[in-house]
Length: 116
Image (cartoon, rainbow, N blue to C red; front, side, top):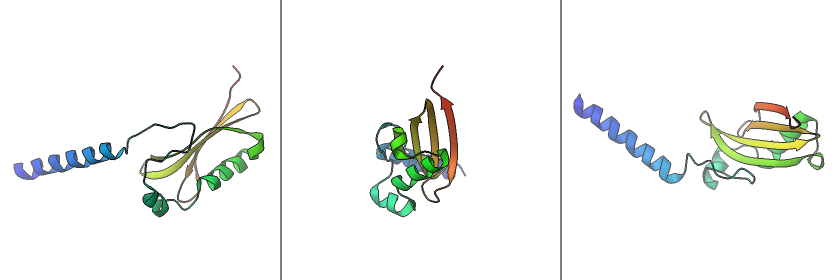
């Protein structure tokens, strides 16, 4: 039983080490499109493109691309799924969206006034 427990700990340590080496927990890149997964993984996971995700967020907000200033477009992992994090400013408000990269569903959204 003790050997089985030790084996599980070693396996977990190896997985964590590989994830850290691969940059799976990276949070860099907030003003340009950034991805924490490889292009091959992205093609397998994402059913929608970053442009489609932007359109989904803009349509939900009732805005067009020429009416907003994008401040963040990033691909990330949230709760075991690939998402696009999209933030933009329009008419004194900051819009924040998380779009499921596989389904295109809006996972989370928020609008906040930037005027204090």
